[in-house]
Every structure is written in structure tokens, then in C-alpha cells.
Image 1 (cartoon, rainbow, N blue to C red):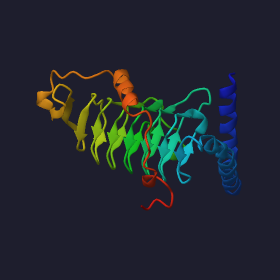
Image 2: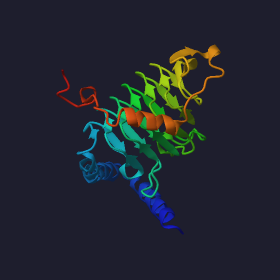
Image 3: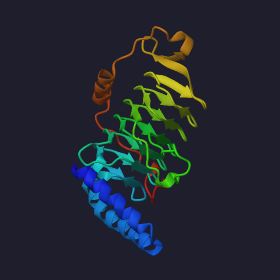
Image 4: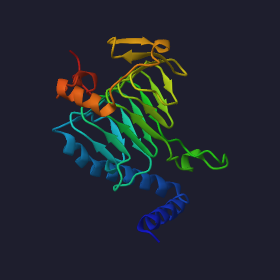
Length: 252
């Protein structure tokens, strides 16, 4: 039997044994949280000189996330990587990304945020849910799904309370309006509003303007890597607005 399967089997047997005693189960849970919390501090210190990760944020699955440089993760944000594997990075956050306050990420198969992305407060990214095939099993114990992939292209902006659910790609240069519910793929350089969302405008480079969807049939736009290179040349380093993300002393 493979080592990972052996560990999983052992863990399930331990859980089964602990369920027989409420006091032992609670004590073990508290010890588990404390131990892993202390061990995870080393990851925060690893990033302290190149990123700002608010102390009130929470990352479940540090060994399965890859974080670039000049990243801001706002206070109250929770990143939850359900299928954790130190040999595979389920979530990748590229350089110069700002994640606002109280964002929520639940990662299924994988979730990637490309360079220069910006999220406002209370945005959600739901790439995994609890298995619900059998209502006779408590959903809190049923495990989580691991099939959906979420991809945010270069320089996307998500307004307050926007929500991305399921297997979704948001094309580079796109804007997702406040309160939007996104459940399908969004083409590059789109403005999206509503719940459920709809595309209302696309950016036309020949006119240097956002045009109505009905006028955007034949628009041409740069590929993602060319777009990224142009942004890097124009903005080699972003001065992040930390006052919008820090735990305290953020008044101006």
C-alpha cells in the first residue's frame, strides 16, 4: 500500500476511535489546532520581508500554496485548501496581487490568481464543497469535492462581495462587478455585472474604450502573456495600499 494511503487509513482509524469518547475527541482537536498553528508560524515569517499577510487571516494548507512577491492578503481572509499535498501546489498566487479583507477561498483541484489581480472586501471563491450524495451522512464528515478549477487571469478586478463558484476561468483584464455571481467562463477584457452575471461591455483596443457587447464581435486583444509583459514594463513594482488590508493602525 502507498504511504499516503497508509497515512489516510491510519488517520481514519484514529478518528473512529476518538468519536467514542467526547472528552478525548475535544482534547485531541484542541491539541491538533494548537500544534499546527504553532508550526505554521514559520510560513508567515518566511514571507514577512516580501509580502504582507495579515495576522488575522487564516491559511489552511500552507504546504500546498505558492505565493509570489509583493502580495497582500487582507485581514479576516480565509484560504482553505481542502486536498493538501506538499508535493503539489493546489493554489498559486502570482506577483503584485492584492486580496482584500474577509475574502474566502475554498480550493478544489486548483486555484490560480495571476499577476496584478485585485479583490475588494468579502469576495468568495468556491472551488470545493462538501460531498452531499448521502443525506444520512453528516455533511461535516462527508469529505470535500476536488474537481473544480478556478483561474483568474492577469489584472482582473473583483468588486465588493463578488462570488466565483465552480469550474471558472475569468479572462485577463476583466472586471467583475460588486455582488456578481460568476458560474461560467468570462472572456478576456469583459465587464460583468449582476446575479446571475452577464457581460455588458468588452474593451476595444482600436477605440481605446469599453464598448457594448453587441459592438464587440470582432474586437482584437493581446494574448495574456503579451498583456502581462506590457503591464510589467509600465508598472514594474506596485506600491500596495496596505491601509485597506492591515489588522490595525490603518486609519489615514
